[in-house]
Image 1 (cartoon, rainbow, N blue to C red):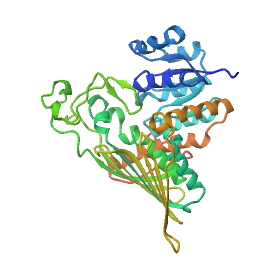
Image 2: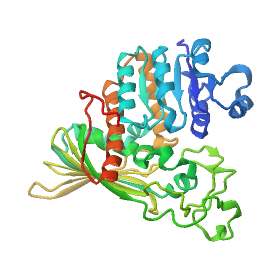
Image 3: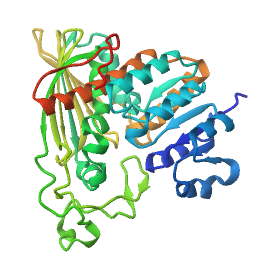
Image 4: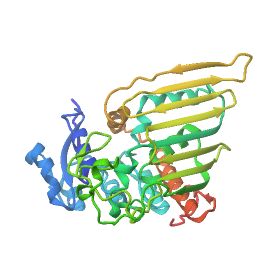
Length: 398
């Protein structure tokens, strides 16, 4: 019988607690949670209540890497703090799965990719949507040439939860997330790059804070607001449920606060190395929570629809023939959160560890999704198109 992959989780926020349960034998026989690490020992309580002394507890990452007998490390720290744990774990010879976004600068993305290329362990990023049935089938259709050579693409992120997720905490605005193109859109930007079959070389973006923010006192909270009962963006701070099922404590500052400075919508025009062109649009005040993709090729057009409950749809249209015809497919929802992607990503991570099958193409895609988001925000800020540094170019430090 194969020994389970002994796993550690670094960062015990809501996502880290969730991953601790996912990457353990109670959820998957191939993994066993053996260690956790967080700077705040108070965060150990939930793990202790469930796992007791079967798990070791650490406030020092390097101590954990030396003392704990672990094979794989899941990096689930806050967005600005992914780089050092990821690199340290790779250098220690561990398999590493880092939550998205990879990091917040192009230079750091290059550092991580350089380390991953040299590492003995498997390296993956938490792009679980690549493992969802609708996107796997879209990729299969694209590679099979069902619509010919793809020339034009478009993706639309409808983020109805944007107000609840991102605009209640003034401590986690531009100075923390840098841009929601990184924090939220990195999934769809990765999928867009993947389905276009190339890497981005230039981007021009526009965006703004056109709905949230305003004139309210930065200290105003939902719990004390006299208008909270009629506000659609009121949150209950003690029991906020994330879209992957975790229940967390949520800051409940007013979304109309003058401290809010993240763009709540962005539009991008992207050029690709293979000559393809794509647009991308993200909106955080739309009423729906979906992802939609369109691709136009030399033989036809393909449309893909995704939502978390798994109501997937693919539509193929052929217009370059005597008779226009349409085909529709409804890829199966395989169960689990993020459209089944969380479970499938875990299975893929396990398979690659067992078969020692490093995902080389996916490693590069982690860089390009990150670089695209960072350069897009730079374009929005400057009003100029920005060339995206390739992995073969010198680091810009952006």
